[in-house]
Image (cartoon, rainbow, N blue to C red):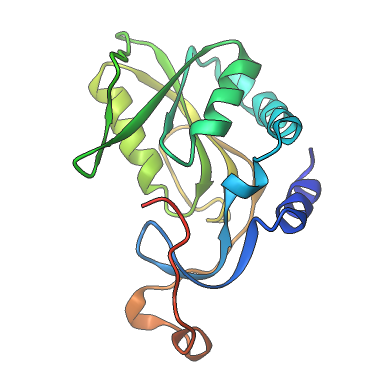
Length: 188
């Protein structure tokens, strides 16, 4: 799946929303990528996972670790395509943690999988979990990089779609956005 095909799929599936949105980071944007809608059909998930796996395979990960909720679907498919183990971090008292008996071995090569990256906060939380357990960050893989390649995780970062999408602090909204009510469609 090419970047153009992926972007068209987001449009066709209604997963690329236009309006005034508050992102998980607290920043505001005119666009929102609702990956859950884009990943409803398993053949699409398989196609996106295969394309992302082609980019991530050289990173030689032993385990894919994804933050819930956004990274779950693509993380599991990416792990399946790579033939490696899949783990996920989930919220407990507002913070991402490993639960359900998941453990990371000392020196285990971890690939963090995300659906959409804007500033990389959720991916960084997930990286911190892997490192706190003795894991080694092999890289980060995302379906969409909204930062235009500006996010630096200190490791390789691959994505299928790289766009520079404007986002704003709440105190510096452009006039056209300030007059539109904001919604928060993503996971919190």
